Amino acid sequence: MPSLRFSISIFSIAAVFTVAAQPVIQPVTTADPTPAQLQRPLATWNQTEREWAFRNWDKVANTRTIRRGVNIKSLPAGAPLQALVEGGTGAKKLDQYIIDNKVSGMLVLHDGKIRLERYALGHSASDRWTSFSVAKSITSTLVGAAVKDGSIKSLDDPLTRYIKGLAGSAYEAVTVRQLLTMTSGVKWNEDYTDPKSDVARFYFTPPDADTDATVSYMRKLKRDVPAGSKWLYSTGETNLLGVLVSQATGKPLAVYLSEKIWAPYGMELDASWTLGVTDHEQAGCCLQASLRDFGRIGQFVLEGGKIDGKSIVADGWFAAATTKQADIGAQGRGYGYQWWTRDDGTYAAVGIHGQMINIDPSRKLVVVITSAWPVATGQKESGACNALLAGIAALIDAEKNLEMPPRVAN
Image 1 (cartoon, rainbow, N blue to C red):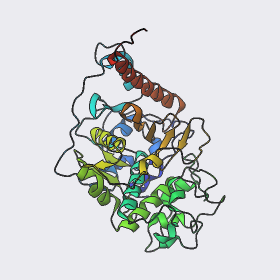
Image 2: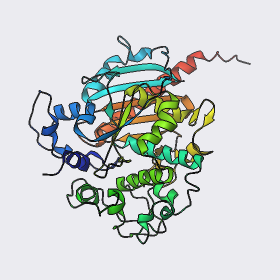
Image 3: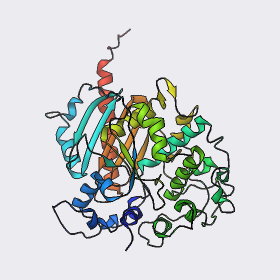
Image 4: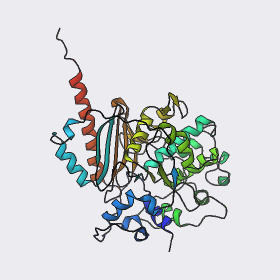
């Protein structure tokens, strides 16, 4: 039987905005599961198991701790969003959204202040929730930090400058920038309905001796199109980005994240990052943190990656990372450096089953949602989430309009 770590990993990371498999018929249970009961693909978990496991990921997967520091960055309370508090015009709709979409936590930060904070599904401010692919955007930020530090010399460097094990592979001429934007041109199949897909085989294929599991698998892939000519979502390539950062800095991702952001920025709780079979962080998935600390990540990015007035990422990093670098074939949307971008200037870190850090720079707005959607992805769920985000933005705009003095007629 595969290890518990494998059983979870294979179905716990999925492409965002792709068509989800049909839901599996699941037994109905109400008692909390045990970690041993979860030694099967995530797609077969029932709702009780999802809600428990997403809140207790460290009990069912091997993880490495991301240490917090001594000081905590304050998230002061702001005026509540009146329309969404009890008795407000939108309160019942919000309550129904939380119920219908299995939301465990929702946080709205406006100008660095908490305007809304809700918990459900047994989740609380002192708990951690798994991020799924939200971790990809955090991995990207660590690349920016490594460039700032000089550990990565240039985004136009070939990957083989830092990952020697890729020499002679399809990644021989691929640059760091192309890996960041998922435009390597290397073949990859992320179909979670296909047990023979790369995303399935990646986690079950034993690694070559004395080789990182990610490098072992990825260096055997074939080229599809010339590098830089096509966007293709690949969790394997984000995992490879994690190897890149670790090789360049000489530090595990969890340690580097703690040193660069988690401790100095002032996260409230320790976090954790899921490890693969060769004990390297799975950079494309599954960083566990509290709702407020996910909010602090969003606020950190909104502030341009600055701590004590100094940026910890390369100059212009977030301006490039959060704007369209690759065409994904969807009107109004694109892909930056591991961030999902929109042409209106907003951008998001997104994970399956309803995880999101949405950032709206023009409104100084960060919205964090953690959930346990019954499906990995779905048009209905995504549509409802987009409507919620638009509604929150409209409330912020309405407040601003009320604050503006009336115009005087000539």
